Length: 250
Image (cartoon, rainbow, N blue to C red; front, side, top):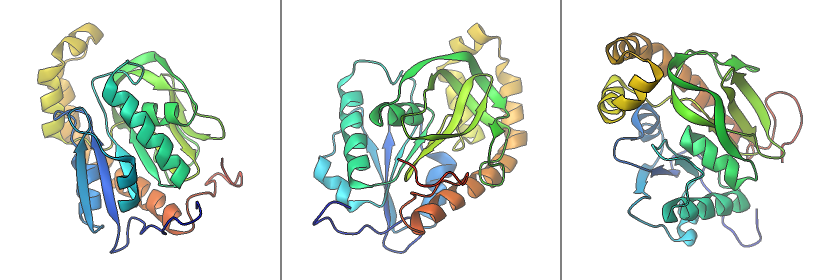
């Protein structure tokens, strides 16, 4: 912790506050936001495509969550540059970051990794090959992405599949390529907004929504396991211990 910086309340404790970076009204926090709403002192949502947050405001939070987006993390947009600055500063301060889909990709960029086209696009429910299935279940998890992250220097890849890396951990940060936050209502909005992507990839929207309704309860249980582990690691000393037994991460 840098000299003079106050110690943060971590998620799972009464004093913690969580900042969610929302990139579009169509990509809300869903089940992830509900999970933290029940366990923390409060959740603030920053619509970063229309608002900015002073870097100094990061000191108010115990965790930062970056959600999905219809944009690529490589696009040259002012709000993407602002978010990269926020994430870089969060890492400098030791503020834990949870990145989801686009959020995992921009987190990787902020930590020195790269984002490129995925080996194969994924829309629907896919299993991941987890190195730690007791912490991050194999799924299936909901996916909707065309890009993929390269794990940043010093990170451990905890899961991958034929599309590429799916989960990375570095220090107090966790990147998830999949969407653990989705509900049937969120997926229905995405189907309406991005139907052209479904048509291009040959995905039947009715089947996708039906499968989501069948699987969301199981995915919610998996989400609880992932977040309980992640928050537990933070609360137990800052998240520097690798769950794979590899020692301290960078």
